[in-house]
Image (cartoon, rainbow, N blue to C red; front, side):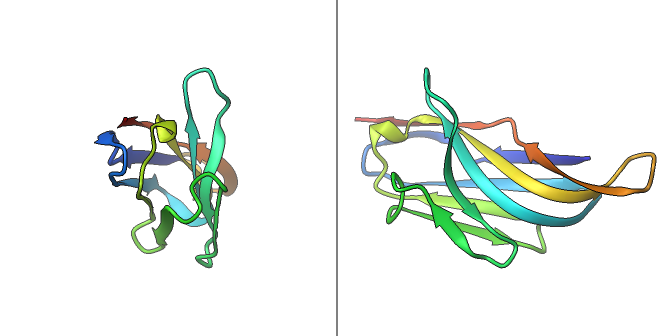
Length: 125
């Protein structure tokens, strides 16, 4: 019922910056948490940053001080500005949202979690 589409990934040199964006679409009633996860090759998916509907952010220690998460509750978007990028930031970044949406046939709204398809971030040394 909700689609998440990420954008903004790419190749950047160490020390550079990237801004990731994620747009949610569908028959959305409300979005609670919006988060960014990442998964590097051979590693488990890990939380990078999250933000509540009240704009309270939280960050993984690995990106704290270098990243800023923000959201637009009107446009249903979440962004992650990442600065001072390091090679260890290389991963596929996934948008995650907990949203209440109206079902396609039932007309009843339900709350569940959704994932985007991911966007690749590669940081060269």
